[in-house]
Length: 297
Ligand SMILES: Nc1ncnc2c1ncn2[C@@H]1O[C@H](COP(=O)(O)OP(=O)(O)OP(=O)(O)O)[C@@H](O)[C@H]1O
Ligand SMILES: [Mg+2]
Image (cartoon, rainbow, N blue to C red; front, top):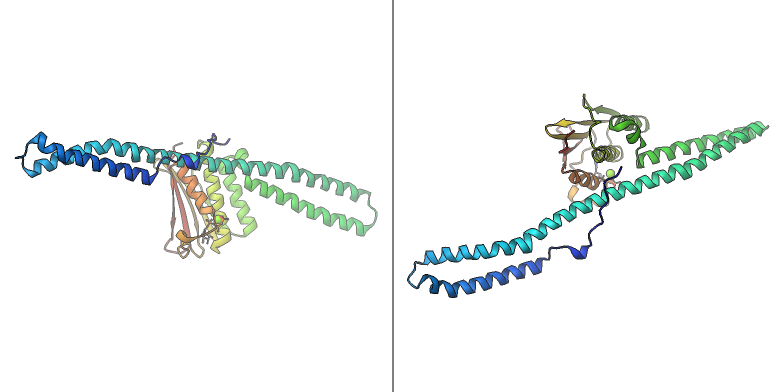
């Protein structure tokens, strides 16, 4: 189940226009100060001390400016923050929808076709007499078999059916097992005694996706031999950690990195749920990616 869709707001409708806000505030200050300077000597009298003039002037100016600031700056900025949250939600939800669609297409179209080819080759093998031809067909069946496995693996990565069928814990165990087998990495999955079944679907999906991206990064970039995946409840939220013993991320200037979407995606997923990402460099080397999500069971 994906979160409800919201239509992205148009960039033209963005409520904050810095020049208009600045000019409005300057105009209000100018006019208010002009009127005050002309009116105060009349209202308070000429012989009042300067400090009293100054206090009355500043107080009235502040009272005039407060609603102007609220209307021109504070309220639009609040609208902008809520638009940003909507956009993030739309982005993540569209990404999940697209991945799910491609996964189903892969499974239903290519997967079914390959299965038909497999069955055809099997039937052909039974009808064939010559051992050379039989061997050739057996080789083709091996290749098709491998392709079926690859399609299943890619489709599963796009839309982890394991998440629907096995729940978060089972899906993470399968992910860990895949990394062990395919990439020859030592994987420690540390879920403690946690009961993860009560987590909402968006939280489970986010946690799975974050761990999937973080471990993919370890495989692709870290040159590590070990990775630890930790997930558990801490205080009022969830603490998720992926730690490797590789070359470390501190040497990479994160601020100037180009191209990669993975860490940005993790940040967005975490921030959508009100959480945050920190990337730490453990004293023993490697990288520790930590995500804190303020969710209750
Ligand atoms: N565990 C890690 N160890 C070392 N370097 C890392 C690690 N994780 C990420 N990096 C570095 O941070 C960069 C940014 O990672 P990010 O996931 O955002 O992009 P990417 O993996 O290069 O591309 P994408 O995720 O879009 O396929 C990587 O290119 C890599 O140099
Ligand atoms: Mg990446």
